[in-house]
Length: 394
Image 1: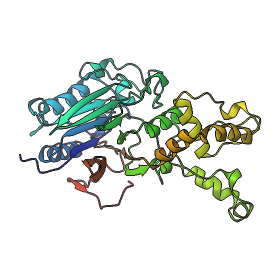
Image 2 (image 1 turned 120 degrees about the vertical axis):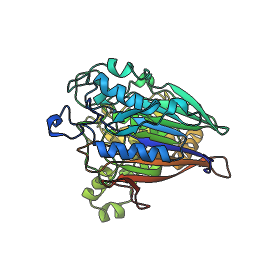
Image 3 (image 1 turned 90 degrees about the horizontal axis):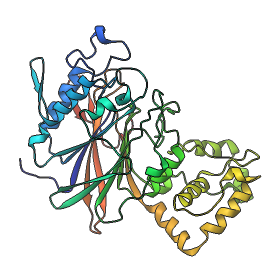
Image 4 (image 1 turned 90 degrees about the vertical axis):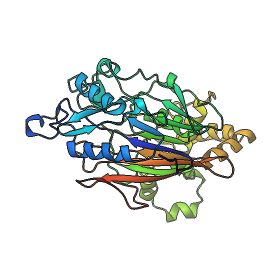
């Protein structure tokens, strides 16, 4: 096939939830919550489309199985690397025999279930797929361009159903170069607009993880877990919920903008920050808390809000540091940085409200910087079709 695209094309799928009975799908016999997994027809349609499309790298961000049994992992690996039969259908991407296409995969919380309903080990997963060391990187080359994929295992072996966590020691800085740098994890680290808050399934240390991903300079971050879809290129100031310090607003503005409205803006922040309050219960603004987390990740010595009697004392500490000329410029540049955020829906889970995936093209502009464009695909009961441009939400 002729390579007609310019740039690097990535397919992002997540949450396949393949059951141990590949051909049964949503058959009533297997509808118990721990066994009810994929929609067979959607899986067949996904296979057919991916085989017909031109792409470089397939990203799979976890929950490839429903309950983490060995048979389902074997199905997925055979589908990716060779082929297998589903009734009269022969499916398989045959990537082990293809030189110009690659796939990368990380586990999700369901991949730790080992036949149960809570997160345990990844023993069954590792029978088919390699160990993921959080913070590790693997590089791929496509037509002279290098892609650095940064892996983060956000699953836990703590016996919980869906909570996630990434060890702070694994949140290491990326290599600073002109390559395309993308990160992948399973759990969501932002709260997309109009999506119901997933407090029972998110990252335990979401504040630290959010600050790390936002300030690391990745060109894109790919994840799943919620079965909802969102994709957009967002600037750091939008992601960090940058608002003026409330204490700095003049009296007129403070009178004109009701307190409930300012709180509503805070609540609409894309990042799931669990902000620490001062001893008197006052919460810092999103902007100030983001800068505090950013500076802490850079090993600057400063105290958290909880170490001050009131929040104004925390602000004074922060103002003194951020007004340093070099740091002030650094923060200004950081806020301008844009990053692709790809939260993929489930690719074929039988109970999902809608199933689909994302197709992303990273191309270099005249300045040598990567910029992303994308298409969203949704399963309509018969095939996967492109969604309307600008329709970012599921």
